[in-house]
Structures are given as C-alpha cells and as structure tokens.
Amino acid sequence: MRKKIIAGNWKMNNGPKEAVAFANSIKDSINGADADVVFCVPFVSLIPVMEALQGTDIAVGAQNMHFEDSGAYTGEISGKMLAEMGVPYVIIGHSERRQYFNETNETVNLKAKKALACGLKPIVCIGETLSEREQGITVDLLRLQTRIAMLDISKEDAQKVVVAYEPIWAIGTGKVATNEQAEEACKAVRQVLSEIYDQATADAIRIQYGGSVSKDSAKGLFAMPNIDGGLVGGASLKSDFEVIARA
Ligand code: PEP
Image (cartoon, rainbow, N blue to C red; front, side, top):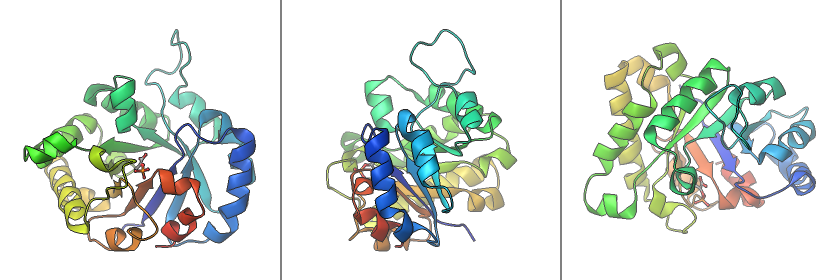
C-alpha cells in the first residue's frame, strides 16, 4: 500500500520571515495527516522552515539542485549540501526549470541519480504541453521522459523516487486535468516503470498529479488508483493547503 505524498511547491515565494510565519500558521492543522506532507521552499528558507517545523511530521524539500557535488558553478547548490543540511526531498526537472533554465531529460537523470546518491528523495517532474496533448503524443512523451529520468537507477533506489506527472497546460492556469486524464497518464507512467523494473517495483513508486490542484479537486484526483498524492503550486501558499493535505 503506497502512502500518499502531498508536496507544496512554493516556487520563488516566501523569504525566511514570511516562510516561517506561513509555516507556523498552518503546521498544526496539517501535522498528523495520513499522507507524507512536504513544503518545498526556496533555498534561503530551508533552515528557518525546518526549525519552525520541528516537532511535527511535516518535511521540507528543495526545489532544485546541481548534479555535481561542488565546483565552479556560480550560484548553484549541490545535493551534497542539501543532504548536509538534513533536507530530505528535492524537486527535480520542474517544467519551469525545463522552460526557463534549459533543463533537459538528461540533466534530470543526472540530478535524480545524484540526489539518490546523496540520500535525498527526488520528486521528478514530467508532463506534456497542450500542443503535445492535442497531437495525441502524451503517453509516448511520458514514457520517454520516464525512461530517461530513470536511466541507471537501480530497482532499490527507484522506490525512493516520487514521480510528479504535471501537464504543463495545467500548471498555474487554473485548468486542472480531469480525474480520468490524470489517472490515464499516471497509469501509463506506472506501466513504463513496470517495463523498466518489474511490477512490484512499479507498484511501490509513488506517482503524484500536479497542475492547478485545489481544495475542490484534490479529493477526486487523489482517489484515483494510480494517483498517490499531489504536487501543489499556487494552493500551497494558502490555507487551502490544509484541506488538500487532508484530502
Ligand atoms: C507546480 O508548480 O508544480 C504546480 C502544480 O503549480 P499549480 O498548482 O499552481 O498549478
């Protein structure tokens, strides 16, 4: 039985002060939810939020990392550094990073492998554009993105990966996928995972849906058999996130 995982992607919002104030305002009502709950916060807010969340079962995550441990990569943060800070999760390959920072399937794979080597759990994002959906290539694309992301990742490590299916047309647009569209895509991802590994491994990997999840849509989406929770952007910055975490 897979435990659901609900992650809030705060994006470039909430510096240390605001982050702590917000975390303090919602932590008590989220603590003890049946799902694993993760706040993916800006790098500079990681330590203050970790301190604010002490004594709760809410975890923090970073939103990106570099695939090298150290070196001449000005402005970057490595997985090794995140691990040293005690950060358990990291989002890898969010569509905004693919779109604005030239991340590719190949860098997603490098980062996912490095995250695992550092003891972090990667939340690996995949998903199609509207035009890819309209061309009928969604499943082919998700299969390819998943295959490349998981290259050279062992069966044991694969089970620590969380895959976030995030249709790009649904991110930040208010246009949520239907329960059936989201389930079909997540089922296809589980199918390719079973081909790469085996059915037991595929059944152990958590697959989230992300894209305009709201307090109204969360329950229906998370009730689908292949959807193991959500990656939530906009609604994770509001008290709505309490309702979503409990959905
Ligand atoms: C996201 O940023 O991963 C996301 C799903 O955003 P939103 O919920 O705002 O669509």
